[in-house]
Amino acid sequence: MQGRGYRTILLDLNIDGVPRTELQLPIACDLTDQDQLAAATDRIRRDYPEIDLVIYNAGITQISAFGDMQESAHRKIFEVNYFSATALAGALLHPVRAAHGTHLAISSVAGFAPLFHRTAYAASKHALEGFFKSLRSEEVQYGVRCQIAAPSFIATNVGNPEFRADGTSRPGAATDGLGDITAEQAADTILRGLDRGAPLIPVGRVAWLAWWLNGLSPRLFQRLMERKFRDI
Image: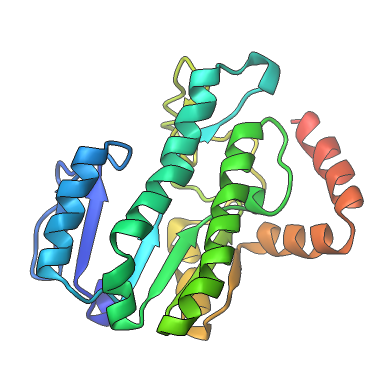
């Protein structure tokens, strides 16, 4: 985005080593902490009353059977993947309206289709898509777009899975991924979809095949997905 001249604000838990430049302002923020989120968004709204684009990319994953999953992990996944996004969208609703801007939610293939050993993750991404698809109808009167990108497996965390005791992990930690693509490839696809105004942007060959097959025959998709992932 900076290559297009955007001034970017980066919200993350840890901003160590992320430089502040003319086009880049990193802000340390736990998006699941209401006080930290309020402080960050108050600052953003004060300095930027008009916002062209908000990208909702915060997320964690969960790789385990539901029967082995802790309730606290299930709730944590929703706090990060869903509630942090909706809270941020609410805080920046009016600046995005002022710019006739765009909300871009980073979902997943698991946002429109089932995924083995990802019950809570898939549920959180389904919820994220449901929210932004519904928000789209509300915000169109303000000239605001709501777009959703749905990547398949992206090689963003190779060799550093960081699995936690509760079964959650950083995205990109999966060892059962199919057709992994690079972050650069994913970003290029998302930007092209953003330019087209595409409501849903499948990202990667696997994502396109999953979107097509699940739309054509959800039952067949589920059978094929189960066969593939249970063999891994």
